[in-house]
Length: 203
Image 1: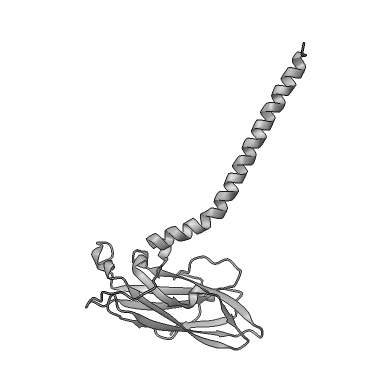
Image 2 (image 1 turned 180 degrees about the horizontal axis):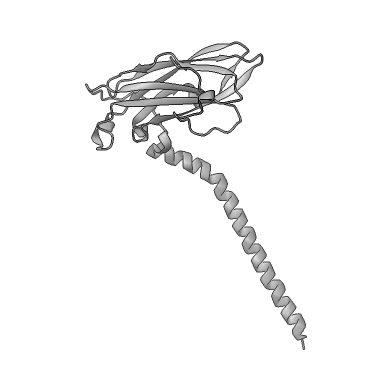
């Protein structure tokens, strides 16, 4: 006949193991979700334009409207990256659906090669999902040698569907903003409002 104390101890061990494996499964699930969250968040932003995330297009628009929209340009550099970065034009006013190229210039002021990655957004955020980039220096990292200057194009168009939505049909001006971060560092979405000490002068 089994001792009552032994039976109780066995039951406690069984419960402890159950709790242990439940906690282990929970931690594993949270870890897996944390790794999956970033790509799902990026996908969500790309599909909805949330947080000012623009779209990437393979081909120009097949529809061009008569109405024009002003696009202004903003350029910023994160602390830790000794670069000068600026748009080559203050603004453009393409017809909606028209493919247009704008250019930025960046110079490495440090005495050694450095890498940077540009992140971007469009404001107002409601317009971001209709802002389509065909070519952009933000698609890849940028490597600059000491003193090197690069002219970098961005080719884009504004989707004519922007005129079909009540919340966007009256937008007259959008701003395309870039911020360069050291490659490998934290890269939050670029914003217009930043510390004045970190914002490079614009044209």
